[in-house]
Image 1 (cartoon, rainbow, N blue to C red):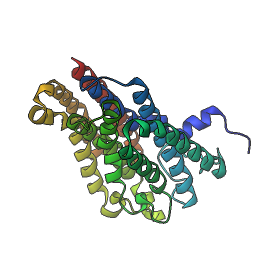
Image 2: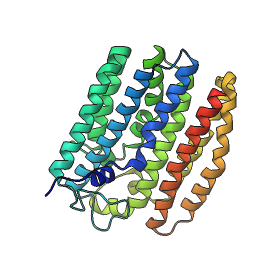
Image 3: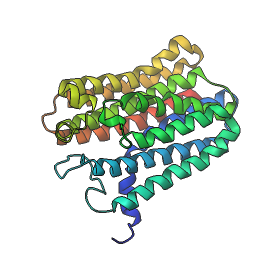
Image 4: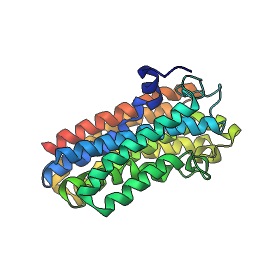
Length: 294
């Protein structure tokens, strides 16, 4: 097989999913701006590190799901490059190892700034990227994916970003990160809801594959509404930043996604909800940043 071109690598990296790693870092950085000032080198390192971890996780999922037989020709979601024969399994494996290696190198600088807490968080992030679908007990195959998706693409990412720039942990950043974490859970649940029937056939026991379609609809609805309503917490815990509560108006868009999910009859219909949710997270993040600065 010839060396994959850039277009195939971009497809394999799944750029439409990168919002889950970018959003909490951007929100953590704008909070750092108000709590001591932005450290631009740290901010860029945290952003690139998060992106490389997300890309590495995506490539690892592509590789391990193929190896475990979880990706078949009947799969409805976006095309996986390993299963489709577009990139060889060995090359995809090299790709995720390189991605995690880049994240590790960037993490060395963040450890210099933040010390041992960053060592622990960084190593856990890399480990979870692999064992999400790989290793002897892959989390995604045993209904254990939601919590790490919420934490490490949510409050952990946001609070750590603020910490390496300011030197202290921020409650405001944890709240903002919780919104990002719920968006991550929403994207995970809509993917699992789309694939739950196929997952059952191949022995991939996601929570939705275990508990069924209705559970998946409830999980998505809870996650997306919790994400958009989370900023209301500032009205109580961080009243000086109460203006960011206006991001809750994105709940109106979230309700449209919930209605579409409630009424779906074919798995293909959920592809539009996936795109809608990714766009909603981008809109939410932009409004959050503007309202925080104002």
